[in-house]
Image (cartoon, rainbow over all chains, first blue to last red):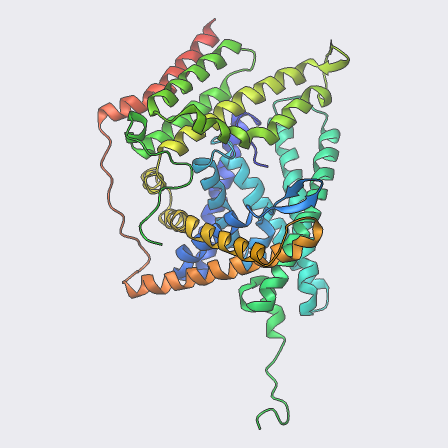
Length: 229
Length: 253
């Protein structure tokens, strides 16, 4: 799923590298606001979770299986700034220690997955949760949409980069149809997994789903008649 | 838990490549891949020369090829894309057997395969010869922000702990008769992932408290690594230097 070396030309790779570095610098500040001095251990452990979560294979049938990409999920669980940081760290480790995604393409991969993927998912959730009624039961469906949108959004951003620095003459409309179409199918899976994971965390530790924070404040402690007897 | 582990890909050794400081290795391999990506795909022999150089480094590192080869499978998804390129790309067509293929597409596919393979191999050389904590120290020397370095070192430190936790959860699922087949398995797997997140996050909270009780005030005491001497610098520069020479020769000819 990661862009390898030589897919885009050097200028585009350098530009996305600069965008990625700027994005990470902003995310470092944002995450410090979200987590304060707990940033290092909590972001580190969440990064391990995203890394491990990507290794869980979800069987699709006919011997094939898919896995989570986790950008939208991380955004909903720990907030978009921390999620940007976490997904970037996962990509850096995958590139440097596992050879997954090229060294020169690292900036491109961070831009696509950690910036576009995370923020597309986060904003989708935020906008929809503003418009729709505030019912806690709506969080998983919204998480589904956020996961669904995040994948083709990253694919669309890739097509944009390819139009600027691609190394083969491919007709753009063909590429858009193929990439967005195929990634929407993948996005459905991503959305389902995101929704299922979010609802399972909500059931146990609702305070650990940052995106659900506004929903939680709406429920007040009520002591019913006869409960104290 | 115990002492820090080597990470999953690292192949223990004491070769020249292993001993080169991590920050020089990262810089050298990055420079090498930059040179490779900058080479036009029409210079066939240059890619052969790059591959020979990189294989030379692999030989120097004493990491057996049988260890590296299976790990090259990470490039399979984009090989599929490369295979499709001659069919979907525009430009002049050539007939190969029953297919009409795009000539620029063929060139692009070859370039992708060549550059991608060299890139994966270069990354694997780094991964197999560098230990996680050396890599983190190397990135710190390359001026990665301190907070980022801390997050990275926490991630590497707990990678195997959380991996083992996930393994135990799988054993627990399977010992209760769970078979991960079909879509009906998804809720079970997703709730496992959910509890994995809660356990990881709570572990992070405990680690933070443990750090505070040991006087953590936003910085980790990192031992200073040895400054690189001239001979190490020269050795690290050899690979991208030779590659650059190949590239220049290709341009001059």
